[in-house]
Length: 112
Image (cartoon, rainbow, N blue to C red; front, top):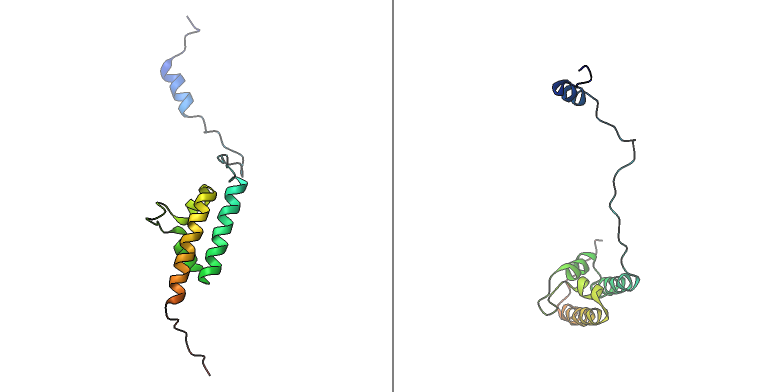
């Protein structure tokens, strides 16, 4: 019975083997799903409209990414969801930009 393998010796030889290494630069990357063309166009349209309406990057981003109770979601998500959502987000943007246009504008005086 010289063909018998000692289980302890087999386990020891498996645990002392070096771990296999991966070639440098090869990492697992999950598959990326591209946004549908129409959704991307609607997203760009509402983003551009917000930047033009507010004239301020931070205000535009705050508008696009803040949950709105009337829409039931963020304006950017509503616009991406479909044409009806885009129209609703544009109406909300119009209402908000008119409201901010009525507010007094405080400007710093130029330094001379």
